[in-house]
Image (cartoon, rainbow, N blue to C red; front, side, top):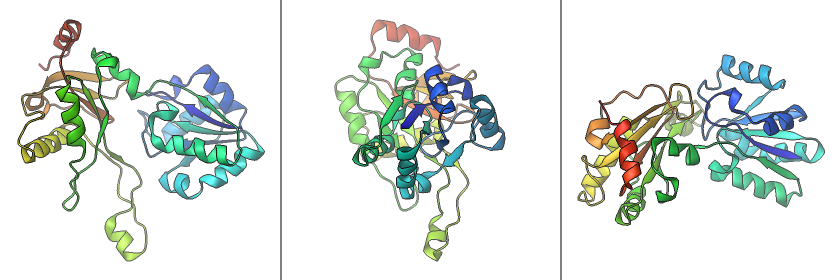
Length: 273
C-alpha cells in the first residue's frame, strides 16, 4: 500500500491520528520537500523532531527523487507499506495527482489521508471560501523570464467579483543555470517569495496591461505562516502592504473581489495599522 499522508500546515503536531497510524505501520517513510515546507523546515532539528514523534526514520524526497526515482518508490509500495508525506493536503499540488496515476497504472494500492491545506485554511482571513475564483501561482521573475500569464486569471476573477488566492513561489534545491551550463549541478540556496515581492511583480504586470484588473489601491490580504501559532493576517491596499514586514515564510496573498457585509466587517479586524 502507498499511503499519501497530509501533514497540515503548522508543525509535526498537525498530523491526524489516522495519518500517524498509517505512518507507524509503514516500512519506509518519505517526505516531499519541494512544493511546500512546514514552519520549522526540514533542517536536521526539524526532521529529527518529526522522526521522534512519528517513531520512524524519514527520507527527504526532493524534486529530483520524485521526478527521477518515483517508480522505485512505487515498486517498494508494491512489496510493503510505504508512506509519502505531503505538507498541507495530498491533492494541494498536481505532482501528487500524478503520483496516484502512476501508482494505479502499476496496480499499486493507494490510500490518501487528508489534512488542512492553504486552500481551506485561507478562510481564516474572513473571506468566504465559495467566493474565490481560480487560484494563481506567482513565480519569481528573472532578467530573462517574466511570465505574465497569471494576470488574465486574476482579471477574470475580478470581472465577476471573486477573490483571487495567489500562491507564492518557493525554490528549494534548485540547480543554478550557470552550473547546468557547465554540466555539473550546483544548487542555489532556498528562496521563498514574500508578499512584498509578489506585490512588486503584480504591479509591474498590471502596468504593462494598462491597470485594468487591479492597481496599487486594490484591496488585498497578506497572510504569513498560515496555520501556525505566529500566523499574521493583514488587510489593506497593495500600496499599504508593499512595505509591511510579514516575517519568515511561507507567505500568500489574496486579491479581494466584491465583499459581502460580513466579509467587510472581518476585513476591518485585520486592517493594516
